[in-house]
Image (cartoon, rainbow, N blue to C red):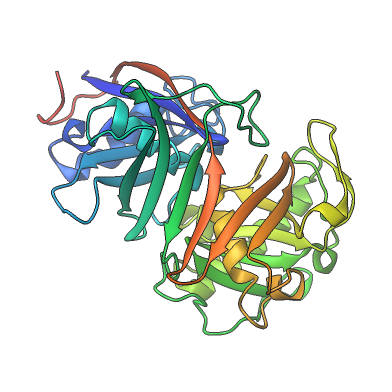
Amino acid sequence: MNKVPITLMRGGTSKGVFLQKRDLPAHDLETEQFLLDIMGSPDPNQIDGLGGANSLTSKVAIINKSSNPSYDIEYTFAQVSLYDQMVDYKGNCGNISSAVGPYAIAKGLVSIEEPITKVRIYNTNTNKIITAEVEVENGKVKTEGDYSIPGVPGSASPIFLSFENPEGAVTGKVLPTGRPIDLLSCSLGEIRASIVDIANPLVFVRAQDIGLRGDESPEEYSKEQIDLLEEIRAAAAEKCGFASKSEATRISPATPKLTVVSKPFDYKDTDGKFHKGKDFDVLVRMMSMQRPHKALAITGAVCITGAGKIEGTILSEIIDKNSNNISIGHPAGVMETIYNEFPLSIKVGRTARLLMEGKVYTKSNYGEGYGA
């Protein structure tokens, strides 16, 4: 058994364990087992670890102070599976990214400027830069404020993330297959889909093409519908070269992310709030680790925004290509993004909060290289 210093943080609509790279096992081969150990995986309840029995709370951020003058922090995102002996590093999590800046400031890893500290973050999963703008007051991260985001109760100080040059983050190509539209084979036949890699790879399908309305709540999907969505996602994973269709759920469960889209129409969010279709640009429902996402991944919002600009994609059929301020309807409400073309960056507002600091005890012993 080892004891390791960790911090538990909420970032946007996700929650995860934050730890510094220096506190990982000395041998890289032990890192995956270590992360599964502290999160209590594989186990759908994660009863023997820190995971919250949900893909949105089974996340880890590994942080390292950078020696590169081009950025302040190196950050690796790990999605820890609930069901398999597997940790997925293929893509980034934008929600967890929103807590990296506050974490770095709280741990003294960056120089502080008031009232806004800009933290340049290098995400190792995607080899992309994210700039976090964090409010600071009296030398500390400001937590109180009137900025609210759908899916999180109350309000807090805003954190603005700018995803810089996010194209081809995982595959190296904006259109991994070279085409704005692909036909994916599934039990319904061939389905039109757009596979786009901006901040993270997403595969987009129209709700009407797969027998959905587009405003389903996360609890509303039948097992058959979830299986169909995973079947389509697995076909897209094969097109991207991540895994064969038959192995995609096991080998690449988080990437690409299946996203159902439709033209805007009136709907109620999970809190019962009514949203008029004229007040947003696109309605989306996203899957996360084979389960319906309760809100919307930030990298998903970035990809949706960028995909709307690409001629011939499913998103370009719905979103006005001349608009740079995009509003996205999702189960928990409406999210807004800002598209800047020269140089390309996409900005999203979030909130984050430090929840707990302490030490986690592992079940197994690992090599030297941990903090005291």
